[in-house]
Length: 366
Ligand code: SF4
Image (cartoon, rainbow, N blue to C red; front, top):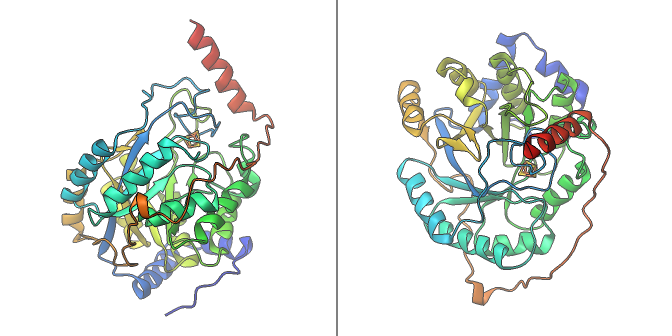
């Protein structure tokens, strides 16, 4: 079995990414088989527990309040609503539920307490629980861990250089700090990015450098293809070609051999053959359910048909790590500290973000 390397450079990664396709596929598939069962794919369900109205300006996201999109926002879901959705996901083959809230960062208070109760509830259903709630302090990460959280998702999105062209309301270093806070607990790290945002191949490699040089490397890495949504600054980006997705998945697999590589947003525009190539190249996780937060995703039945055709089996929960213990709220060792961390706010101007914001103002008035 290969050693996991933590000293990848951009040049190393570009050399892999640009290999002839057949060589790239062969190398990635060989490494994949050394570390994983090649016929098993993890199925996760992504649930938007609080949609829209986000104060951030991520250029790809229809949930940012400043853009005019067709998203219908909703307040934080109840614990019972989330439990019902988790049970449905479990019945259709998901082993993990990932709960996403459109927040800049977690704030101590009743809403976070409600999320902690959701985590306790889903862990008791013997499913892996993941959250993606924005920036997080160490104390908040500890409280999530105590509730039974299995994974925390916090994407780096792209390279440090290109990050400044996508988001102006926070910095790349805030992302790394949150990942570091999660690493101080026993919660696993899920962090990946998006291709097709107008970045160069060098930025894709740069993102993989940032992820693969983390020690330990993230346990999950989602690779998303941009779904360009009307009203967002990236509404006119052209779709990612399947070959780019395959190259990105294969390169991720080679530099992070033990990680679960998740084929995430953008699957609706991929053929089954294209997705099969991604599984061959080392993807071993998907998001199931007809929506990924707010963008479309293949129907669960279609995915199960694809699994049947390809002879793939959904991964059982907790095969890559033990189930965390849930501590009841009244026995908690960690109290809300009401911290107000100073996450950065660079505030530089990104032309396409500004243009989308101005367009939204006009549309809202009319
Ligand atoms: S990606 Fe997350 S943080 Fe960024 S605007 Fe959307 S919901 Fe907010």
